[in-house]
Image (cartoon, rainbow, N blue to C red; front, side, top):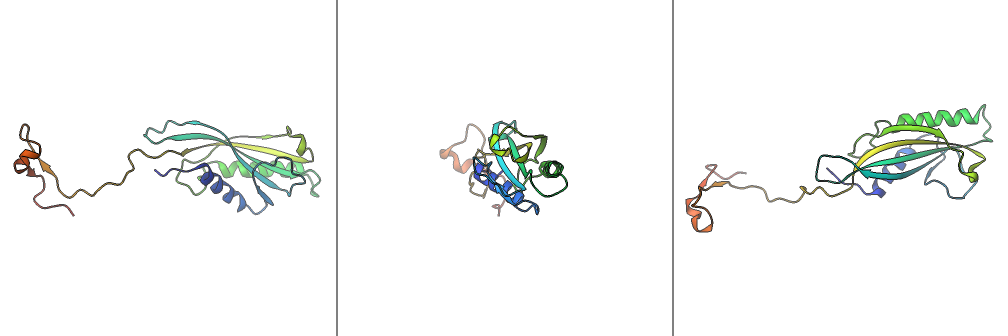
Length: 176
């Protein structure tokens, strides 16, 4: 199984978000920069823990968030309802999505209105949370191997370099 860096995962998710027709901005959650060009999508990996992959390769279960930000003064019928509809769209997007990587499908967890950031008081902010398991470590069994050319069988106690002539080929001719 391939392994992915945090940068590779981030780039795959944000590339998918950038392909959404209604978004005006995709990136990291804004620090203090306002005004924002909305509707905007901001992505983060909030935490991760060891996943039980059943292999020797390290897998992590990531807790991820996508924030949907809509300007409260947007001149439409209901900016709040619009923000909620966009959050529902993103909820459906993350469920079962692999973002073009060879990873386990995403699992939608929740969507909540987020009014905790006072710097975004002029915006409706929804947070969509989901989980995704990804391989991040090297597969301990993935190493270059010389192709097998021939197999020989020896019988104890006549084994070792001093008994090479006592070995019998398992196949009459060499393998391709």
